[in-house]
Length: 159
Image 1 (spheres, rainbow, N blue to C red):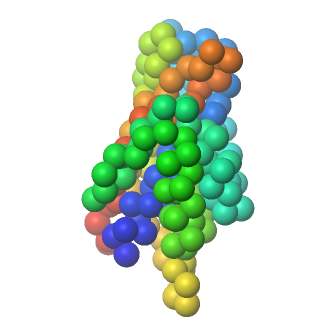
Image 2 (cartoon, rainbow, N blue to C red):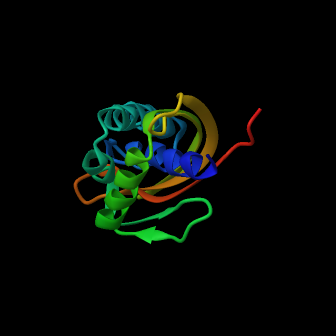
């Protein structure tokens, strides 16, 4: 069950990355825009998880992104990240609801602190909900979109 939580939290972080923003965070107005865009990205991430679309999740990351799943080695690069999320989806992740707690940043980088609620249903078992927390470093791409660049997460203890 612990591995399902780790994998599911990672999915949530991917969804947050491919969000277009109109400027670098810095002033309070800019941070509000970044937060709004990240929250919209959270919805896209959840949609990709519900569709079981690992390619859509991976597309939210920068080409040279790194994910740091709990109890696992670092995974670097969009292709490897897609393979990781594909495995997580196959293990039974059915939904991911991401909640942004805080957003900070300057220039071409921003970071988000958030919470995730995952629905996981391994084959032949009842669905369960798992909670986790995460930090995502966002990087502004040349196109002006923001992408997940570094994604780290872990699960919360069962209640």
